Length: 117
Length: 121
Image (cartoon, rainbow over all chains, first blue to last red):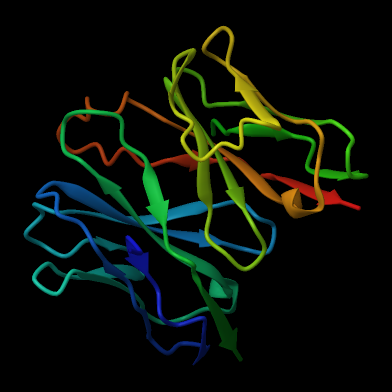
């Protein structure tokens, strides 16, 4: 079973508009972390935002916010006031496990965002 | 700002040849990861090191891939012989502190290098 599901292969948004990128996850762990990374055409993965499973507030980082709905196991990324430079691939990822064992990030298949003028 | 260094950025090779990628993580980062990203897909973990020890290589095709981190600092990923299906981006990442020891407020995020793009002809 897929651990991380991103159902939107591509999304289009106009500059200055807001956009939501969907992510659902599957885990039986109580403690886990959810990440969003941006990958421009240059290839580097850039960390955007993090949400811990015990965090009560939705995470925010500048124009990025994470709409965390634990019961639905969803962790959607919201980008407000889109900019042309936001055009890139966006990956949702999950780290399972709390304080024991060796943890790794499992990534979804990504969503390509294109911002138009 | 400290970065994860990778080389080469691009590599073109013929099938059955050997190829090697090098990664230097952020200083002090105990955990190092090699991910493979096939075009149009998300990264998949190949191998994870904690200091010099391999802690997860369950997805590493061990008949042709090898990885080492001899002194617990930089790392080399080798493919021999290369096959057409190995064409991909090879991403190195590091994190700190060690997994399982995240202090409060630390996300344990991975810091990635720019990747090494391999084309096998």
